[in-house]
Image (cartoon, rainbow, N blue to C red; front, top):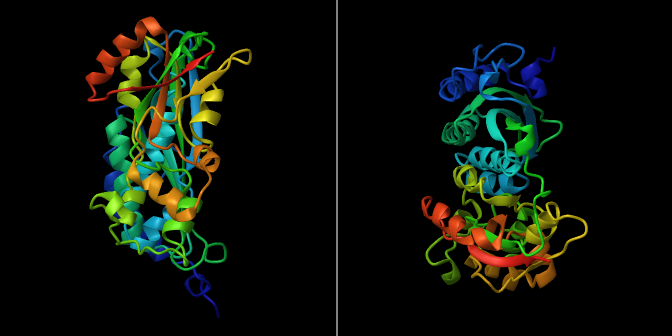
Length: 332
């Protein structure tokens, strides 16, 4: 006789994990959530009284092989934060206000303490963005994943007025491109970064503190939390022509997504000082500059396209968030 547990799936561990996660999940609930965890679906009541032509905006993403760094150093309490912040930024740059989030966590072997730590970061980020975590899925699949491996993905849903959708259509010739700093790699380029800094042929160990990182370990630098730009985006919307969330493809490929087809743009990559983690990767991996630009954000996590006459207004509004945008290019 073979049991489900002997086959590799522990239902009791799943129940333990849920009991640990439920208080964290409930801490994200807003008055719009009308059912507790445990139903077959998440229920969110829309208040449409504040909207005239509401449009739902959604995005789904993961955190890539950044999870491998978390697994290798056994630090799991920020990887969920990365997921939420990345997802929220994706719809915020479209002009949307995030409403709720759903997550998917799959693993080879469900360890309740690990699941709880991941949920701590995920729910912390949900609370910071004012959104509810209304549902999710936890899957134990030993035939798909190996040893301590897991993957994490999520979906965010938000709302925007139809006439306030930000899609680049307002971008004009002569617009200035302003960049806001990233906190490191965010959630892109980790397959390359890990191969260079944490792979079997690397000269570094995860706890090593290279002089270039000014006291930070390799693992700490790679696990810096993906920044959430929701607050500053909200304040800049009235003057911005477009926002760019710099993810896979780097500054160039992502900025192209909001530039009209008959326009071009320039990016001055010498306009800012790159965080040292990028120099470390490039030098020790002998990575070509073009590859660096298309793989990493290189220290700029958000780009704002704005009319030249509104640059000072952007600077003043950003200063309220302790931000100092950098002029990195222009639209032609």
